[in-house]
Length: 465
Image (cartoon, rainbow, N blue to C red; front, side, top):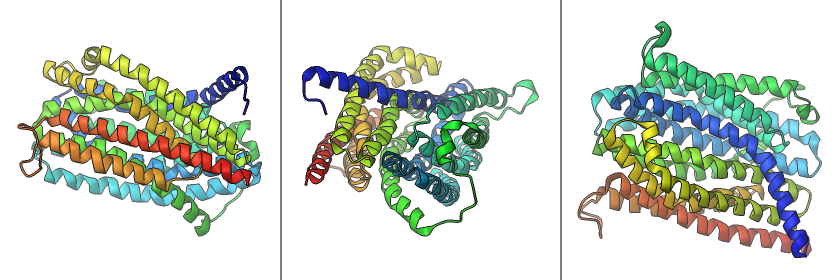
């Protein structure tokens, strides 16, 4: 890398441009995808508290399964990026075909796991109406699980060959479809049945299949895929190839599972405090999920950029790319923290009209502002590490952070059980859980940055031998 300050600044600017060019279409696509959840919450929030609570609970089960699956399928990003960087384009179609076989199996497992998750509702102190609506929401939305796994396989392939525009356009189309069908089925317009929360599930489940169809169509028509087009012939499953991607992807899935269960467990545990805390928790979580799409998109771009640099045999550039990406995410975290802290009351009012829910949502958003720096940093650092095809160490770090810190501290503060030492005099409910989340994210960010520095230096030292 350039040694003079002037040349180094120019190199940093060039890398920021290159990474942003890769990330911004994915960001628009990710925002549109999360916008579907925003649409669900916003529309049901104006139907009834019970429907909003049902979406909150059902979306928690769906999120645990689908985010875990997304992590498992993310192995294709690093694999294809390394092949592209090494100039082995002839290998890419085979990898994609095997990733789709993997998606078929993972999608079936996700379908079953999503429906089994409804049994958790039996152990929560839920109103009968809320339980029934939440259960039906999960059953209906689960039809989209197989489509989602196949879509994520093609998503990773497309990203790693530097084709990110399709995800943006398709996700925007999916959002428009979601809003329209929500409007028709949640409220019962134009003679359609008024389904409330279940209408959101129908829109999302069907929309995922349409997004998969659109992605297949785009790959078949766009010239950007011709050199690596994966559908030239039939190919059966290869256990060795699929096993290799599973060994790479399962730790990522477990990592994502650790994080999403920490957030979703909060939603489930807050349910015992009533509809207002549960609704406020879901709104705050929904908004920060929207904000999180920016560092996440930078992180996905980092997997490609770091993977391609390593595929070219340039660990020095890979380290440079990784730190530029982490710095970009950190800078965004600062901006988002300031924005959320200053605008938390306006954000709450945009979601719901209930004054009690608005007030509690604003309190939770203030806590969310505190962990924006660590959340943005940890996702960028972990993504850069995955670009090195290293997934187990981030998994252990995330498990330690979220299950070793976030959930225990959150339960201590939120529930204040008498048997736990140092518990507060009264339960802090959702606020206590969010303090635990802030602690866990800080631990994750610190350890991941330390490990990325160690890993990148070690790869440079090995290349120099």
